[in-house]
Image 1 (cartoon, helix red, strand yellow):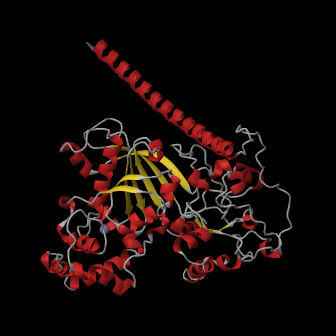
Image 2 (cartoon, rainbow, N blue to C red):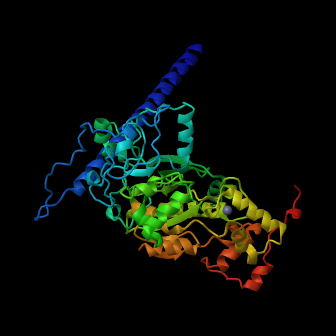
Image 3 (cartoon, helix red, strand yellow):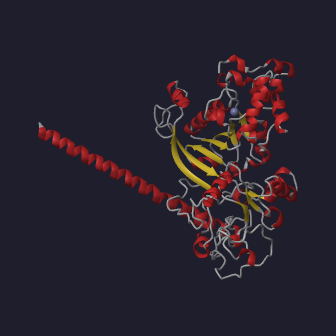
Length: 502
Ligand SMILES: [Zn+2]
């Protein structure tokens, strides 16, 4: 008997060892896969960019090397590493100034070597060669500055990108080299350290990715209920199990603006855009004014995340259906379940429909933009809530309350939003899981047709958010239901504070 127990214990130990070895092996294979994918992407881009001979075959040409590493005489202003204590502060630089030698940047160029890397760091090796204004990390650039200020982070830290390669292959698409289609992100941002390795290794330049691609599982309690009620089926691939666990590929994107393209998108002059950005960020970026030769700006704002269900290659396949939700952040509802708006219900409806489309052999995509409170921020949002709840919270007054405080009813300005669709290779949207006319118009204006618009089902709309949704529908949001008149909107009222105990 005791012999048997001992034998069983030995067997169990052996199985456990095999399991853990298996896991280690799987993760090693995954890591190698990532590297192979990234290298394949780099090769494909370089091949695609090679000029073709008249008979259509590819001609072997030498890919231009990055500029030589010869010493350039630095000007006195930049002779000291910028971040050394007591070194002279470089307030700004000028074009043609001695020692200032920006790395090439030809936005929209098809060959990534000729396009050039985005170089924005101000480290001692990099400051002379910058071809972009701003800083990496979007709004987190300020925390980066703080980490350096308190010496938590060494100024000469060199990122180690081993095993960080994209977990899925994407593109290249013709849209990547159309300077009118992508103006708010770097189409080569996911491959920057590998495409521009020579600049990093030979010149010591600091070049970082502005896009990262990973794979994950996600669990949402509402989707567990969708599985239980039979609205979602477990397939073991996209819906992993009865608890509604989803497999997803995620793309995080930081903003990289090509200023002439951004200005054109809004129909304004580049100079006017640069001046407004300079003046209204407290003069933080003087090179917006002094360096008209630098056209790229990494703004200190939030980025976006793409959640792709099913095979990422299907996003750009015109022969399969695509369901898409473009969602703007609403932390109070998305994460904390506030019932004053339809944000989380619509987000979940979007995820569920996206998953269903992917399971039907198509593609399902949800894109999450960090544009809290219509890009007005939570402080303004809460002020508006107060003004609504202290008065009578009527749908007819909904937008006026925001306008009274913020001066505008919305600052999301969707004109730059479709860039991510171009980058993903999307050329049409079969089912748009959004009622926003602003999102619809921005996408269609960019030449991407929307075949069907799908409103949030009525039963998913919380009572207190009728004020918001009815006001939006009245203002032009898409609906298959009724558009209320101004008189009817006056009758749509939200809960007052007194209705609940605090
Ligand atoms: Zn909301």
